[in-house]
Image 1 (tube, rainbow, N blue to C red):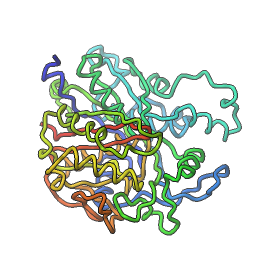
Image 2 (cartoon, rainbow, N blue to C red):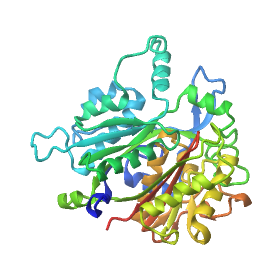
Image 3 (cartoon, rainbow, N blue to C red):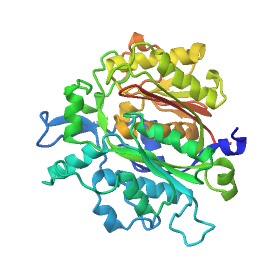
Length: 414
C-alpha cells in the first residue's frame, strides 16, 4: 500500500517549445485569446502535396546560460527533434531548481527521464536521408534520443521512451508518476516531442486523417464542428519535472499543480479508427477519476482529445457522456487542438499544460472554429472565446491510434 505522502505527485518545472509559444505565460496568453498557431506549411520536395495547413514552431526554445546544462553550440548542432527535447527538458529542470550536474551530493537527486516519442527511428532515418545520409540502409548505432539527452543533461536515473501514438507523452507522465510513487526516483523529467516531416504529412494525408480545407489554414482545425474534415498536424516539445509533493514542499519550490489521477485502457479495435463502442475510452476516464479519488461532478474542465476527425470526435463525446453521466452536461469541454494543431507524440503533455493554465487563470480555453456543433458531439462546448470560471480540477483525454486510451486528472496545488 503506497502511503499518502508518496502517492501525491506534483509538477514543479515546465519547459515548452510549441506553435503557441515557448513559455507557460506566452502559451497561456494564446489559449486565453483563442489565438491560432496554424498556418500554411511547405511540406518539402518529397511530399506529393506541397502545401499543408500545419502548426510549426517558429523558434525552438534554446537553453539559456541560466539553464547551463547544455552548451548553446551543442544545442545548435542537434537535430530539430533533439532540440524539441533538449530545450524544454533543460528549462524544466532549471524551473524546478534542480541541477543534475551539481557538485553537492545533497543537491544531486535520482532523476529519471521518460520521453513520449512515436516512430523515433523513422524520423531519424528520414532526416538523415534528406541530408544525403545512409542510415536508412545502414542503421546508425547511436543511442536512442532519450539516452542522448539524459547524457547531455547529466541525468543519472532510469531513462526510457514510451510509444503510444497520440497518447505517448501522457503515458510518459503516467509512468513518471508510477516511478515516483514506488520510490524508484526522487524526481522525473517527463514529456514528449514530435516534428513535422514530409513522410508524416504524406502518411496522414493518405490515410485521409488530415483536413483538406484549402481556404484559410487557421480555420482548418474544427473539433466537434459538423463541417470538420480531419486534424491539422503540429510539432514541438513539452517536458515537466515531477516530484513527490512532500519533497517539493520541503524545498519550498513553485508547484504548478498536482498530477492526481491516471487512467489507461486499450480497445485495439482498429489501427487508426476509434472503437465505435465507447466502453474502453470511458473506462480510462473512470479509472483516472478513481485514482484521483474524485466523483465526476468535481471536475471543472475537460480538455478533450478531439482532433477534428469525424469519427474520433463523436466517439470521444460518447465516452465523456458515458464516464461523466449527468455531470457531462454541466462540465465545460474544449479542444485546444483547434489552436495548437495536433502535436502527435507531444499532444497529451501539451494539453496537460493547457489544463494547468486553466487552473492558474480560472479560465476555460475555447474551441475556436466551432461554428456549428455536431449534434453527435453534444457536450457543454466553449466555442470561439475563453470564459472565466473557477478551475480546481481538470481532466485531459488522449486517445491514440491503435487504441491507446488515456485520461489525466490535474488539480490545483494544495
